[in-house]
Length: 123
Image 1 (cartoon, rainbow, N blue to C red):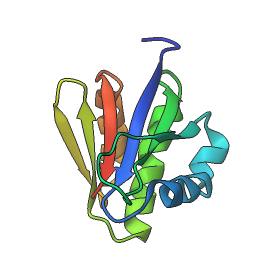
Image 2: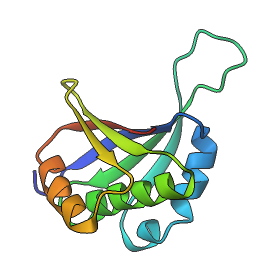
Image 3: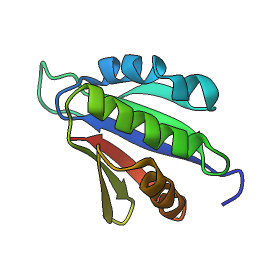
Image 4: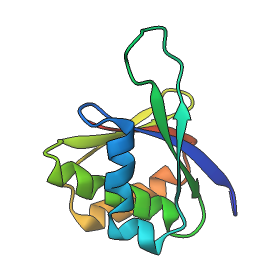
């Protein structure tokens, strides 16, 4: 997986995509890692509902993926969310509570690097 990039959808139950992008960009982890954020039009059949999707483009190698996950956990703490849920292309899920100790987060990040991560939800 060296030098491979992933397009990971980011979403939060109570935070619109544009606000989540602003929150991510204000975090230190974005200033230190090469993480690109794109707002893309989503598919929606419902009128009046914002269907914008936030996508993070990150390198699997290096520290960008770990920085993204750590930063999102920081956002869950400040926004009183309880966890992040990582979902792979095949539907597998990994839930990381917002109060997970940093040494455990490092172990989980190593595990995540082996997954085909598709979506991260703040819940």
